[in-house]
Length: 202
Image 1 (cartoon, helix red, strand yellow):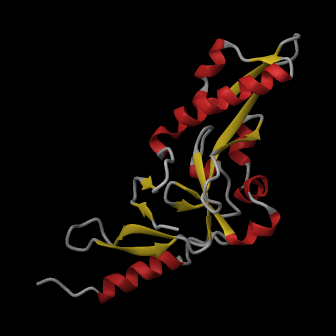
Image 2 (tube, rainbow, N blue to C red):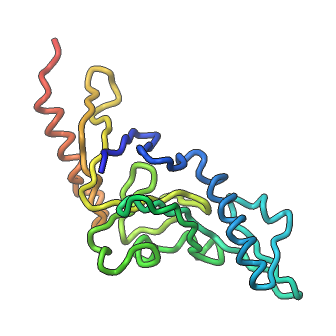
């Protein structure tokens, strides 16, 4: 697989994947179209206002007077298996449940059991730690989450945001099995090594 270009603000890939800045509108549109098809089969309908609720979920209205149901989804891009189309995955029926969903629970929805230990989830440039919630990363309805192999590299800047100290190189994404603020990550340790090895400029 090719390396992924990653900066502090933007993630790009060589594939035609929507950027994080446009993911909400892209995902919401795809989700609405998919829901229209399934809703027709189940005797449900989407009201015109439902297509305008992108950032806060999509409401499904039952055709025969049933209670409306709101769903919250993410867009999943599987980069482990090349060629798979992005998937719209329903995570929860309430905003609170969506925000409190742990990364570990989301992994179980997205990743086959035999690949669970070898796959990480990435949002923008951050590896999602298994014990944290979607809300702690400010992940919203329609956000794009990527699945990658452990050790997948990206190209990014390291060191202080200064032209005198910037360096671009290949670094692996962090592991997802810890989230201790007092423990330096593998990527951060590699960046420090690169900085120390870089010749000082006079």
